[in-house]
Image 1 (cartoon, rainbow, N blue to C red):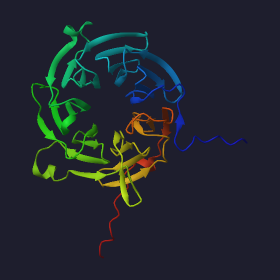
Image 2: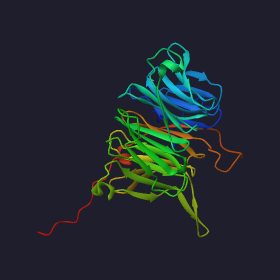
Image 3: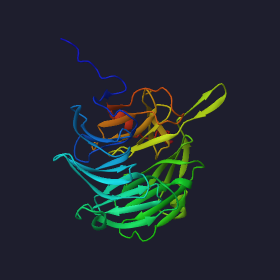
Length: 342
């Protein structure tokens, strides 16, 4: 009997990857479809399990983010200042609206039925994709931010906005007139990524300086006393610390543990509640630009894509790896209690 070849430790590499830096990738909430945005001005839709490219849309500039609406359609945020709706089933696209500068982040809220975008023009905009085409009819509201928007995350009706200058604004989507909370990052350096806990109680935030902070929404002293930060994606060389940006955070949908990806090419899995690292995957060819778990947590998509943290230099080709996730890598380990005295 011929042995079945095992996929390499890094996972299965997808065919037809983007030809320039990968800005984000996301699994669908309904299937193993994967949406990918790239600096090569394209958004691509893959079926991760069958390794097939299902569709592609070109933009007028690099695409900095993308998100699903349903399995056959999504939205994109581009450096050409546009917010687009993409329909892969019919090969159609239209412009929902525009910002005054590149659009850095995009999210679709199933709770509000709205698209939310954050831009380097220091605004947040909400759009109703059900409105007829044209900016006037789809724009729900524009909300000034303290600085350029770097990262957004949604859980239920809560929206977390991380900007330059280490500002963090927390909104309730049902009342966007002003933030529910205005915060400052607990980390001293520039924010790279913010992601809400699946249980809705808080968010994890990463910085360019090899750290992640674990934050809680509840302003009470008891809740705030639980927040903490930890170092990661670092190494010691000749007696000095080399520190890498943490570009990506992805929560496991079943266990609430989370993966981080850094410019060191490593993906680590953490148990935030027990403050433990559960697993480290073998090193990827270059920086980890983005991460996403599939809806059931069985797959992890990893974007191995140089993020130009050291300027323009020779680097490994951009690639997307699909890893099969073993339970042991992501399931919290029970605490070992010493035997109680008889």
